[in-house]
Amino acid sequence: MATVISVSRADRHVFSKQPQESIRLLAEHGVAGDCHAGTTVKHRSRVARDPSQPNLRQVHLIHGELFSALALLGHTVGPGDMGENILTRGIDLLGLPTGTQLLIGDTARIRITGLRNPCSQIERFQTGLMAQMVEKQADGTLVRKAGVMGVVLADGDVRPGDPIAIRLPDGPHRPLEPV
Image (tube, rainbow, N blue to C red; front, top):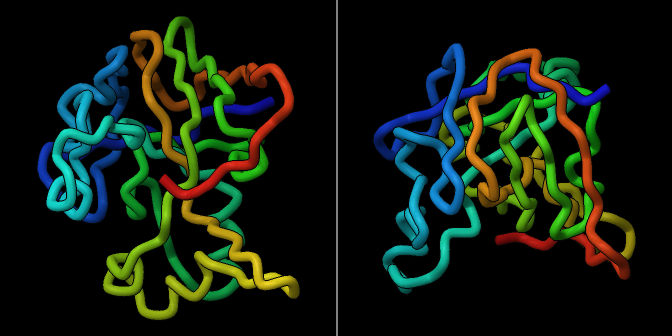
């Protein structure tokens, strides 16, 4: 069963976010009190290019299994450290198609918009970590492992322990791409 392990937010632009007892998701806005919430882009590099772009990165989710794999390689990464709002367990976030809806807890609903594109801040956070976030396959395809991004479709409070239900979009399914 897919569940929420941890929830985090930050009211200013910092790499890591602080774990919380709960976060409030607001439809068409994002995480209440989080610096990335809003209908238009909030990520600094995207704002510099075009501040009127729609915000497809209102919520950042990472699978907790990634942190377990990183620990085996000598990296210590805890909840909120990678800037995620929601840390999950039991769901292959990276394998979901674009447009998948996640129903979290009683009422919150997120639509997955794409992959987080790993950036240099990951390496500044911990030396050698960036190399673990991107894998080049034999055919040259890059596999990005730093989580997925989404937009909030329905309000709701999200807490550790909340169940996550998956609603796949109608086919044909499109693989996730960086947003």
